[in-house]
Length: 502
View 1 (cartoon, rainbow, N blue to C red):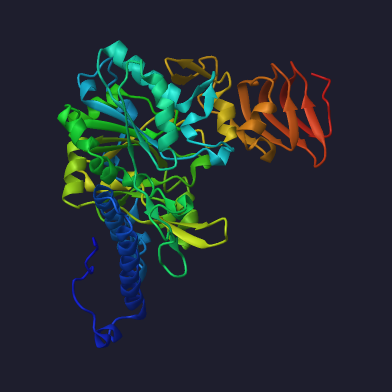
View 2 (tube, rainbow, N blue to C red):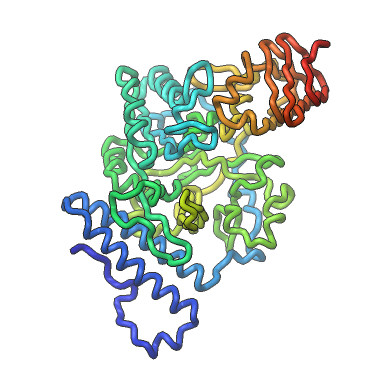
């Protein structure tokens, strides 16, 4: 039977345990119990090739679990006194990077989208990338159109890669078949599948490797480096002459290939670039770059001691945040994975299952890898490169006349007089995509909108124009219907109204 060896390789004697602190002894016991359970799961996989892959995956999970136990027993929180803003040369202003019409390095590039997430937050079944966001096109459609146009216009072959999870893989593979005749090479691989851990017993919740899917989870996008390598795709890309990969979230519609940033990466010899952008009040939870003991690092809110969370959210101390648009050298990924240099900070995600069981998911963030790469630094990019669609409020913006669409790329409508994007807050009635779509005859015109808040049972007719600050509140049990052609400018609408004056 395939199994793990003891993490220390030494037998434990009762008298030696008594010299350890209780927490350390608990960690050793938890690690041994976890190893036994994982070995039991491995032994249930009958096919030899499948068992090898599963064993490798469980081995990586066990390393992550052990790292978390070690951090927990030492109580190693980040030392807040050592957290500093990064020095100026660690974050390059985007404006200082020369703009180029064409980069000679494009043929060495691959584009990778993180496609592990489901659209459940927005009330959709299946991969989030399959949600329609603009003119009948999905996130995937827009990304494919961008890369296809790039390949055709520049006469290059930039492959398009999707990192799926076990939640999104089957459906995504079915969807991408429709691009078979397009001028684009689409490659997919899966991130790992790790067992959820019972919070009380610290044992894996699955009893069988092919049991209930709810007992497993994809361990965050920090898994990218190892999964890309384990899939064989990293070697394939390097063999095909690819040297760089541009990574971004599939729901960030601003993450397009920027040839100036690619040139800067090559010329600066950076193995890792992180695009950051200026923080606004809407971004207070976003991870930020810091200088920690002379080393550049990513700091996520989950790592911040509770007494310093308000500090972390402050725009004064931390002026930038991570967009998760990353440029990474492929051979450098190969090196850090093979040399086992990766030690990404563990993020603990507490969950409660449908049956009420409290479980933990141990995850990592891909941006945390920045500390392992040579000449790594940030590039402070314009806000237009960070256009995520996390909610229907974001969807409201990207479907509107605020943006124009060219070759799959969204850009701010030149008729918009300000560079800023309106602040939009839509209430629970709009939370799910289906509910959102039924409440608008067509997207309102918002070129002159600053702020919109809508709560309660509200519907919009066609060709509604919103300007300035508009607040619409339908009281419980009431309905507000905004008639077609209405112009609302700096208005507060409340109660149970059918507006007639406009």
